[in-house]
Length: 371
Image (tube, rainbow, N blue to C red; front, top):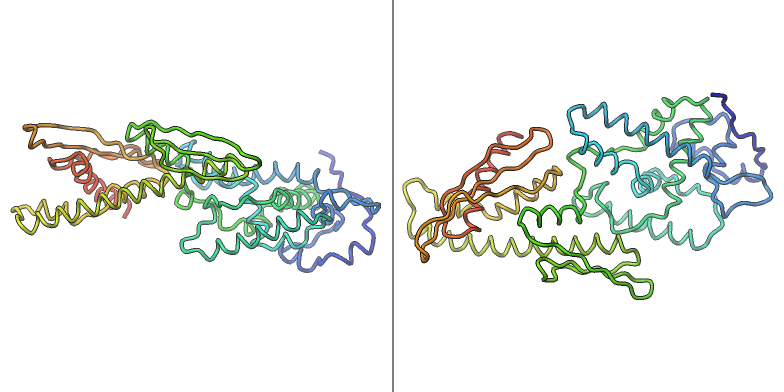
């Protein structure tokens, strides 16, 4: 393909207003045609008689190039991952929210040329929120932030990629050489979070419960309610409906976990008392009493590794009405090894305790497989 690069003559006063040392230093490359770099950082609000076009054309080609490069990296780096898992990794790596964080992390946003007061405030608010995120314990670069990034920040990452592509004579390898360190840390199977909406769906599917969302809008504010078998378990508001749904799902998950912790503590106290009164020869009661929050731990491992929620199966239900005994089995479908062996727990006087008994064994199996 014939290479036609920008031949825009950038006025000297514009060239002097740009800190090329800092910008090219952040990219770790020197441009042969700095007019391309100026175009890549010029927003539509900055258009003037200078003749410097905005970044839109460069964004178009840069978007396609980065998507191609990142897809290649994931495909060849994770050769044994199933297609669905690779698709999730790519979705987390090729999107405006991630690119916006790349821009801020590498200080590319400070070089944006624009003339919009509203845009300046949006960028400033996002940068402040992003810096606060970095200070949070356990911060994950792909952590599905509550703060919506201004689109322009992701756009200039793509437009700069397009400018590098054209400036290098369409050498896609040069783009990857520049962008690989800029994109660090890249998403991995261990750092990919599960979206709260998807996690909630998985939990409800596993527990065979009915999940329903109800959305309404008042003025510029959307309200989303989450119902679990007809009972409201989460609610959130946000100007954007999708963000409100995500926050409502997150609130519902937090309510679930809080309830599970309270139930597990109650069970642990009860089992501890029984263990003190009667400790059988195999120590089974002590074992089950000492493992607190077992199902929650198992669920969190599945979420962390982006596995479906564990699948529990009732193996046996017997005994008189006043002394029922339940036995449950559990297994999980891992992304790299397929289904685990089914772990069958001990007979227990309640469904909850029977599931915990099986979950303990599956946790031990997972620790053995992945230690």
